[in-house]
Amino acid sequence: MLGNTYDHQQCSIARALEVVGERWTLLVVRDALYGVQRFSDFAERLDIPRAVLSDRLRSLVEHDVLERVPDPDHRGRSLYRLTARGRELWPVVHALASWGSPLAGGDRGHRQFRHAACDAQLDANGRCPTCGAMPAAEDVLTTWHGAAPPDDDSVSAILRRPHRLTEPVG
Ligand SMILES: [Zn+2]
Image (cartoon, rainbow, N blue to C red):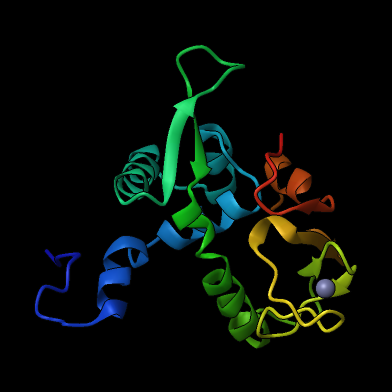
């Protein structure tokens, strides 16, 4: 079995990949940035085995990317929220979105990110062209342009409404 550590690598990228390099983990972080907090909502979005999702959430809590807090609306259940350390992954996720954009197929619907204060679309580096700032996640408005994907689910439909990153949805 392949390990998930890179013990012999004296490298901060290797250390970071030990936290977010496993399959699905960065997509959990992406959805947390989009405002997903409940296990059932992550499960619906990602459509992965519950055991895998549990493992990824547990690992992200262990590494101080997410914090687990009681869900005030559902006794006995938890919410998973990005920590300050977790929100620092926003530029990483945005850079991957920019880099992956040519691979995603331009004729389909796609997500856009705007600096909420200026209502201007961020450039490929995550910078606001109006004020020159690189806004933190909570200052970024996300909007959806174009058609919904054919294999849509109810959580994704909610996430397509314009809202600020990290703002809880659903
Ligand atoms: Zn701006």
